[in-house]
Amino acid sequence: MEDGYPAVGELVIGSCTNVTNHGAYFEIFDYETLGGEVGFVHISELSRTWVRHIRSHIREGQRAVTKILRVDIDRGEIDMSIKQVSEPQRRQKLNEFKQENRARGIIAVACEKIEIPVEDVERILFRKFGSIYDGLMTVRDKSTNFLVKLGISKEAAKEIYQLAVKELEPPMVLLTGIVNITCYEADGSVLLSDFFSSYGTAFGKKYKGSKINIQIISPPMYRCVIESTEWREAEKIWKDVQGEMSQFFDTTDTEMSFERK
Image (cartoon, rainbow, N blue to C red; front, side, top):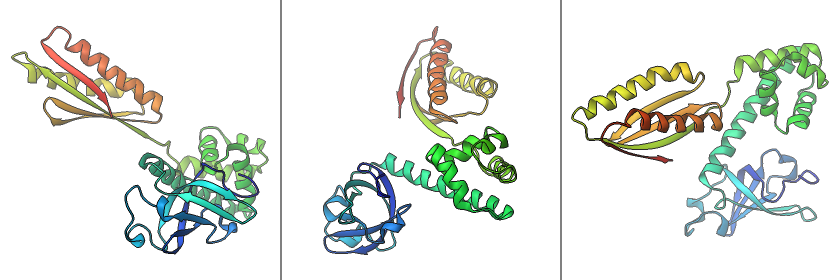
């Protein structure tokens, strides 16, 4: 960010303020001081498909995740793109936006109780972590002393810490894998049932804080949905599922394959 402007390549969220025949103007969240029409998405950058009627793709008041293509500080102009933002990027950015707003709300409540400026606390956390939410998540896992060392008063630190512990849950990630398995043994269906039930029972003891759900799509296809606090743990669980299934059916006439989605 230079002179209060977003950087080229940065993903931002904005609200459409004006739609023309050539494109749409946006106010960019977190950069509202730049004006209500500083961001512009040309019609060619609205969609990967042909835009026949621009208002069928964007309307005033509509929020959108955009990618910064060009920044002209002298002219106060920012060119952006909607079509160059992938769906996973869009979902992640919206989730980050939601988390950041929630964190700001927690800070506001804490600061109101003890009557100190919200901006002072936000500035400290943002300078240290680059995100209010990331700062509060770190605080949640540490203590009030951590905040005091950053320059926040003990009284404020106590309020912020208590609210962070109460209101914030660790973010969860979802990993989905597909298992194709066919057991040609006479009791193949029983073996499959035994494995899934026994694995589900042992799972809670082995992977505390994570969840696994194995669903039947249509035999021989099964969906394995793993929910965990971090990708590294989810990936480890997915590998363990494959390893334990292979071991369980090793001496049987079984074909299986695994695919990560």
